[in-house]
Length: 281
Image (cartoon, rainbow, N blue to C red; front, side, top):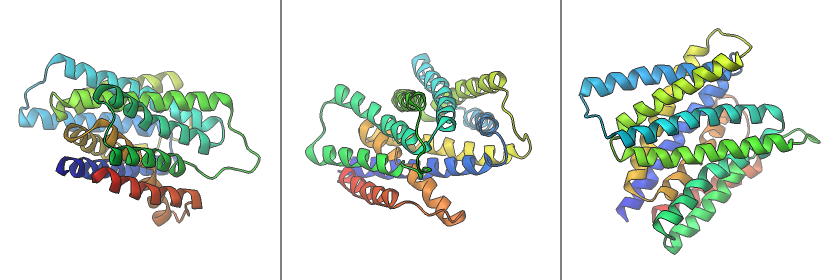
């Protein structure tokens, strides 16, 4: 089906762009606070989106669409802060895998309830995709290190928040993609700035803006691709493929930083390709 192929293609672009955004943010976080990088990215991309919407004189959508986007942007920003906190508490591998799996699983369950069970080929693709996300998200851990239960709980909360954001952004995009992005960014920027004010991040304040510009711009473009994909086909298909974005981060780390992926991650990428093929059919 043409719509399935278009949904898969746009979702892949979203995953690739989000993967680049995470790589830029992670690279910058080696030198500056990740919260400052995220905040600068939110604010700068918000300014760009406002300029585009006003320059094109796009009609403002109904209030409910702006509210959906604002709620998604606000809670998604807090979910990101929770995710960073969870990663800092223990071994990253299992925590990131739980977060990634729930990010995809929440929209899948929502779409199953809302639109019913998909055809057999799509169902197989969704199951394969969820398995791929789990495997790709597994990072190297130090032998003997454990993941505190609280870290897993926070990771699960973050994944639930990210999954809810995908649902809300799909609903908001029905009123207009660019204004939905803008409304989400307004709320997201407010949430991140509030988090920065409360957390008062330590570390260097120098150079965070460049990583923020790159990361925030790529994240915005990824959101744009995702919203378009979610309008063309099923939400669960778009959400599962988009949630494979850690593969992009891993590949960039391998090419630029010479960080070799694990055998499990490589196997997960192979499964991801199979899942995309099934979901595109």
